[in-house]
Image 1 (cartoon, rainbow, N blue to C red):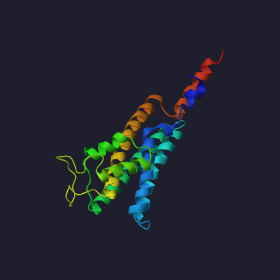
Image 2: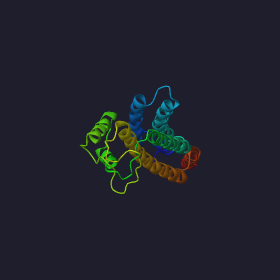
Image 3: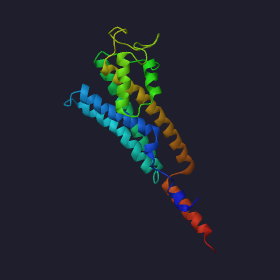
Image 4: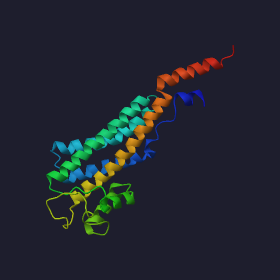
Length: 212
């Protein structure tokens, strides 16, 4: 390995990370959701959009910072994870405060969304439309599901309910991926150390290679 490669290992490439791709999709959907269902004058509108944006930006910044600071990479990735958790609570609050059902984790509508692997907000909207029209997935929770609502489970789900639950499913996937990233980053940090330690090794190796 060249000294420069050892000192500055490959970094960036965040656009290829599945966690980044899903988080960016969550951000795009959240912007549409807030513009449509939450007043722009409400603090919740800005809070949700910023939390979604923070998830995307911190994944990117952490990836870029990894070349010189594994500690910064860990910190920023964890901030992204925390931002998505904050966003999860906001969507759950929306469902509860608007008397809408929160679907069970194993609801077939959630699994139908994940199986589709939407890449854009428009593809997500197509899934929501299919669920609304009853052409994709079940229209009521699976038997034994824990979803709660004051309305009957046989009634047609509304677009706000479908969208919020769909985003919650995507957040679960993104957080799971980020948990794996954090575990891998921690392992790498323990094994290889940070920039200062790599710099020390590089300088030591360079001195040892000098002719006597």
